Image 1 (tube, helix red, strand yellow):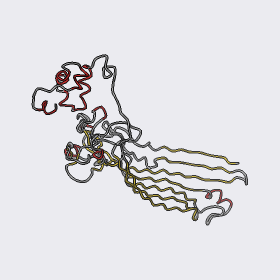
Image 2 (spheres, rainbow, N blue to C red; image 1 turned 180 degrees about the horizontal axis):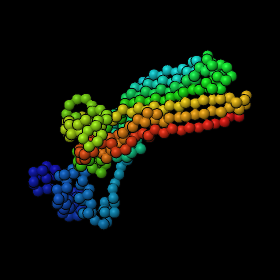
Image 3 (tube, one colour; image 1 turned 120 degrees about the horizontal axis):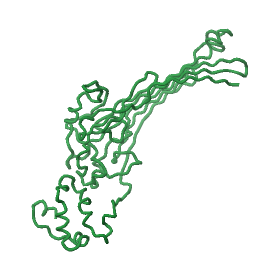
Image 4 (cartoon, rainbow, N blue to C red; image 1 turned 120 degrees about the vertical axis):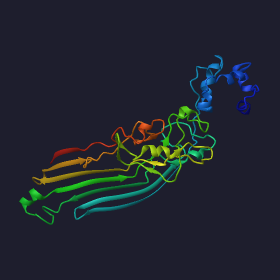
Length: 335
């Protein structure tokens, strides 16, 4: 039947269409595509054209919005190594240093709580790519240091000096991580290049013409801030996938690096043996460092995206990923 349609030949009646649509059902199915919808949206659009032709007595009629088949057809692979270095109260210094190198891959492309269709039901490996949460490098450092002043310390040990200089401590939390994977895609494409239904989204990423990945970082360009120095050049560096591509292009764009520093200063003052006070000042996002979040074309990740269907939104961020700096002051009495 497909060969006959491609060669503009008369179509041989098919038992399925004759049974479901009645006598002449095959011809009715062929003629249902009056506006060229099939050609522009692929096989996944067949249902939308045939739905009005089914009789009221059949199961597949206009009372059925969709038929879904859910199952576990995906696979995932995660490998990681980490290094930890700790110090427990060495002359007032306590710290915890952690570094993780990891790589996560799967063939679904979205987080596990999402449902959808694989781009190619006949080749599940075609969408095998980095997972949405694939952060290659993560570093964090937690530090607390009690200043060496006051009673029991190395300096300023007198009673008066202890009240003024003793009991002070500083602490910090520093975190830095590489960006999450992303892709260049086209929201205006049919989304059925490999036979999936277009209602489940787009194929998982256009293919870069060259090698390597595109790293997002802040650039001041005409019109504002963009994660690419030349968004048009990024869009031109990708092509649409074909059946010759064994894997798709998800992960060929990497989101911006994330880093943050929180600081705290505290002083504990003992009034009597049973009564003491603690004064705290905490700085969340101490340097008021903005991290740019998602934009108008982000794909399941809180970072700027690259949608060819919205050229003006490529690399554009429309919100802040983290919170602006805020300062918290507290005073506590212990007894």
